[in-house]
Length: 129
Ligand code: SF4
Ligand code: SF4
Image (cartoon, rainbow, N blue to C red; front, side, top):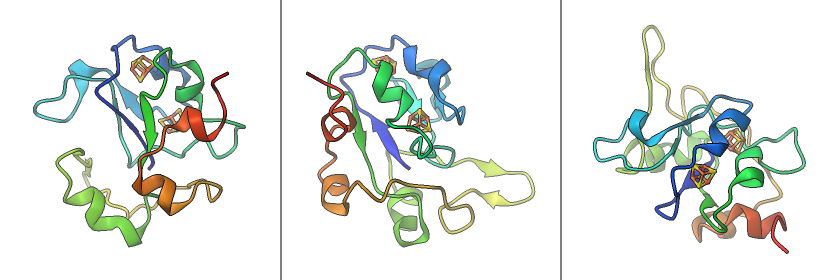
């Protein structure tokens, strides 16, 4: 990761089409057993590193709904693999697509403190007025 969609999501699904990594699915397709909200797959999220701002947060109508989580890197393997907030995909041949197996790009401009605090993506990148 990654970014995380919180329970202030209104399930408008506007973010799904915007994601360049096809990392977002609607609540009905969430891999979480109790998934109610649109869900970001951290094993696919690239934090939109090639764009000025993350596309999902840019279109989201709900201020503060999408927050930062830790980088999807081996240092944070347990954070993602052992979390009840995520269900990581199991690839047919590669197995669990964990941060150790398949690390993803992340924005170094967002600090670990901001990530641990789950600061709003829109707030850090000044998407709001
Ligand atoms: S930050 Fe970018 S890659 Fe990650 S879920 Fe949002 S739109 Fe997709
Ligand atoms: S755009 Fe925002 S409110 Fe709409 S589904 Fe995505 S995260 Fe939820």
